[in-house]
Image (cartoon, rainbow, N blue to C red; front, side, top):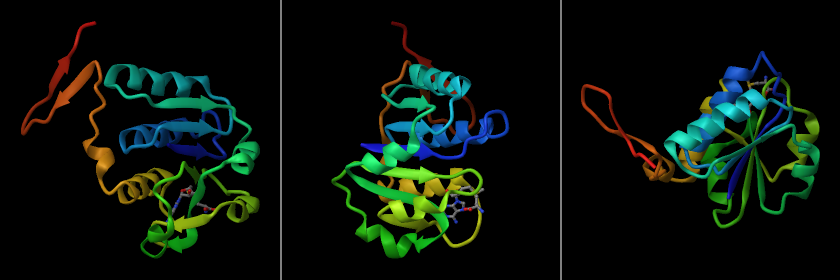
Length: 170
Ligand code: SAM
């Protein structure tokens, strides 16, 4: 199981980016998004996408993130530009244990850097939690996330020059 934990979400200001963190988490192969502060709007949006496009992605906001990090029984990874380069650290991350992936918004508390097993940099330049998460999941799952069949009510048929969507009636 892969869980993404989004820290420091500011309701209103971070709505769009946190929604994109959730969309990327789901589309690139994670199972769940936890958000440190309560935001029912984002929960609704992501549940609606899952209801239409399939999969079993879960979302929960307003979680007690310190407890989650403290009690996590699998591997804990924090994505940060200050971490070890992905190329150096990826071979050390087990792929047979539950994985918690932490991404920040603004400044991430120092305790997080110490609480995790790996601080991972997708390059040591500042960019974005959305890009960092997408790249990490794609590398970690070796592209598997992108070919997953979500078995959704709505299915997009790849097309060279148009929009083809098949909708399955219940
Ligand atoms: N200066 C901030 C900091 O203290 O890390 C950067 C904030 S950045 C806009 C928001 C999040 O994007 C970070 O918390 C981190 O999870 C992710 N991020 C940005 N650049 C990254 C990189 N090069 N590698 C891994 N994660 C990155």
